[in-house]
Amino acid sequence: MSWLEPVKLNGEIVTLDPLDITHVEPLRAAVADGELWKLWFANVPSPEQMQSYVTHAVEKAETGNIAFAVRLNSTNRIVGTTRFYNVDDLNKRPMLGYTWYAKTVCRTGVNTECKLLLLHYVFEHKNAIAVEFRTHYFNQASRIAIERLGARQDGILRSHQIMRDGSIRDTVVYSILRHEWPAVKTSLLSKLSLYKQDNQENDGDPE
Image (cartoon, rainbow, N blue to C red; front, side, top):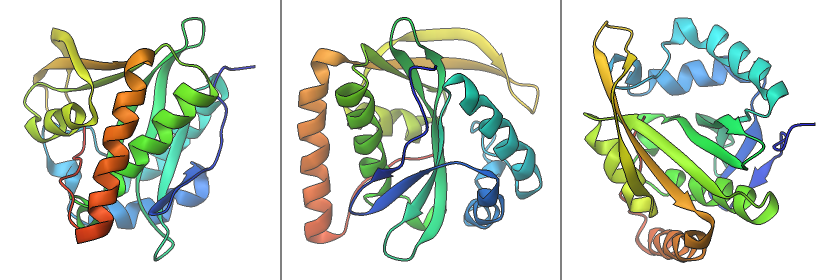
């Protein structure tokens, strides 16, 4: 049995449902809101690629790489996706990424609560040692969003990945460690509280 397993995570703003094939069409609609696949530095699928994107993610769930559809509670609309991947069961260390949202829910509390739910689950229920984040060196919006979570930069993997346009990606690596989680949790709860007060939150961007 894998260390991580599919689980529904319930929040006030969003619910994270384990990804399945029924989410293909809702995610096609979500990704069309903002056309995020056109960002050269982001690994976001186009509507035409969504079927294979979801199918591959569902298949990987059998090895503990758990993907989620992000559902907005106020409208019941699927507005994006995120996942644990490259999960190191032995060392209780997952990566958290493949995160993107419909443009209309960016700069809201959606990303903040998603990360709170995911980190709470993996640190407090699965006793993770660390959670790792990776993003493109030139994706400043994503880097800022990750740093705002409280993650610290571990380093840069130079010439790490060939992008779909043929360019070579330098990957920035961040992590949150187990002993850092209580402070990160307090910060995320504070950000959500402010969001509820004024409905404004500087939030995440696709990785």
